[in-house]
Length: 99
Image 1: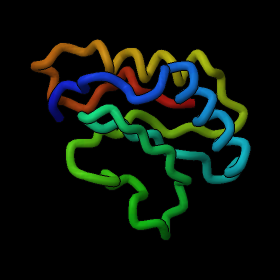
Image 2: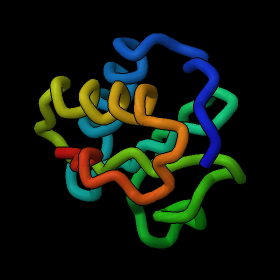
Image 3: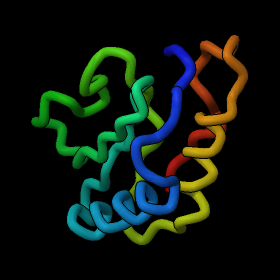
Image 4: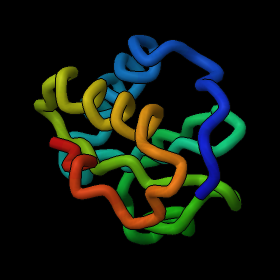
């Protein structure tokens, strides 16, 4: 994945969005994807959905899987790591652990 230019929403508002969605889907949780163009996708981790564990569009990176209850610290740490990782980092990040 290429370098993310900038998020289209603040880290705090994206974290709030993830936490709200984990409350909506407490049993299955949600997957967070961030794309090169700065868009973010918070997708219920329902296996029948076509996006589960597959990028919603090309140029998106899986950030983590989150379930309720989830600490906002975990979500922010994962987002911040992806935004600031070195350009040469191509491997899946063990830093992105979710909740």
